[in-house]
Length: 254
Image (cartoon, rainbow, N blue to C red; front, side, top):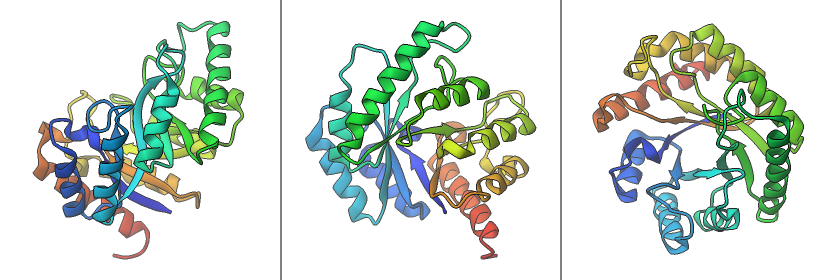
């Protein structure tokens, strides 16, 4: 089952109240709250307030978008406690601070062991972990990401996916398909081949192929809008209408 949402960092300058209002106006299902601005780690009172305003608007908290980098000296317990207060079923984390091409075997092994430890802590609170698919981490390519998640070998740890900016649609689709057995949520945006951000509608052909791939699994997941052309609220609302139209079409609604 595919549900829709917004990643709150799409509008870092807006308040949590404004983010909730936009998501509600757009008719989305959920919000992934970011840990860098809207719900900083350790501010449990704020996390509870944001949870309440989200749920009172009829929305779900899809995940806590932490910027916790595995292997860093920061205390993961603080992130975990914040996610619990927020009511987040999932925490998005980053697999280290070094790209896969620069990491040696010892570093990979340390990251794997640490993620397993974190997953055990999270399981005690009924929370899952997901690895951000991003440059500058061990989850920066299809091959490295799949190898990493296989090494972790924990059903409480999943992968996120998003299109790699500047990569052609067949390459992105290949990576998405490879991720499917471990895939949790997806970040949604569209850039052209010159790496210029465009309205989501301009990526219809690519995104319909991605949604088709996602439809091959019954696993519930969120497709969450992240990045909006020119950072405009009206463009976000248009992108939300576009995303919902594609999903509803695939459900046979149209």
